[in-house]
Length: 379
Length: 206
Image (cartoon, rainbow over all chains, first blue to last red; front, side):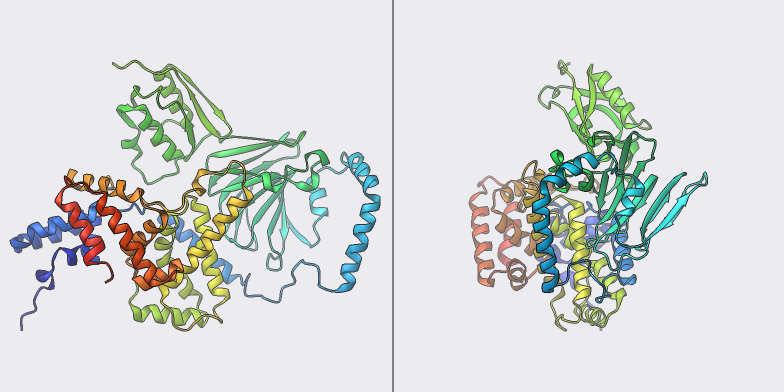
């Protein structure tokens, strides 16, 4: 019996919906060469194949936003959560008030007392604020459960694996503490003095918080660095991957600044950093000193070689590769082009070269790059 | 990435009986379809990753209460959609000021030809034209088209995901089709009409 090639009976629609054909068209190259050969052997089908290919290509959606590494990381993180049985343990004690009348009465009573003593309390708090500084020691004193402390007194970085699998790389003369187990807690809290780089296992249900001086950094799963040595005047937070939000620790905010709590947190994306000034709890957002390429697999050599490229395109490429916002007057600079190879330079060097060509300058404001230039005459 | 109905069922049974690897396998194969669907609602990648993780963790936590037989794809799409939209709403609520424009999109997709692919001018023009028409459609119509065409869900599955009646799905598609038809000038190239025909008529509910 002769086995007939089913594709011989395919019409345009069949090809259009055929999964194998579809994926071969998408990958192109050698995979599609199979079909080109097939069409040569079946010349009557050649036009049909080409039409089907054209249709498939013209209704394509870019699906490359998520990097394969990201997918694998998320799956690994999720497996870690399951393995640590963080959620299987249903019998953990939640840190919530128990529902019994006695406790409610106590709460009611204490509210009453607070109301009565309110005025006195506010006054006291203000006068106390100097002695109650958000130092590492004061922060851990407040924690209701026992903590593990790791200290790095060596000159080499120390890798500490936290109970949830998160990796903290502790710089020299630095200290962190954290709960022995995160299972019974609804968040993962870490206290830091000195510097550490965190690679956090994503657990959507348990936010990860780093307390350093008066600043709190809150993340779900991401990579970032916190620096807060006792002698530093400021706390620095730098993000390499994912998203991070920072806010001032509400416990240490003076009453007139009470509104600057978690709700008005500042969100950081990769290549951004904040500095938190300890003296007045002000937060400034800028860019990291050496922004990294976020799209490691892109052909940088080709992308950074600009040949009479419109300046809008140049900025669009930089934006995409560094994940940062570049603000410029599109209309004003519409006539400008760039002729330069920017490969091998840091972002700031690249911006310098571009601005020199534009006869302008740039500044970094609120984590964004602002381009000041007057535009170009059309050649 | 796609499972046959048989191994889809067996992996589901494994999950119900507490197999962690089954969960990881499911996550691995459904991450991209779900995440790419999520990108139509928001470009916040982190929010999407959170939602996918939460979906699978909740699935794991509730494995004792789940139905023993499900239509896996439509089940996951339905739950994911609900979860993600709830999270987006929450972002809207907490950030009344300075709301990032990425959360304001309702549903959008852009057809385009990847630079890596060798495509003729013809194909490029075709997708450009198609895009112009699609953007004019209301979100709901776009979503039905997306699920039908890019995720090849059936009418019943789409109805499930959008939590509407199957007949409503048909109506939405019919309206979208009519709009696309009237928006197409006579001069437009033959292939484009052919494409519409393929997408919306002959293939309406396979």
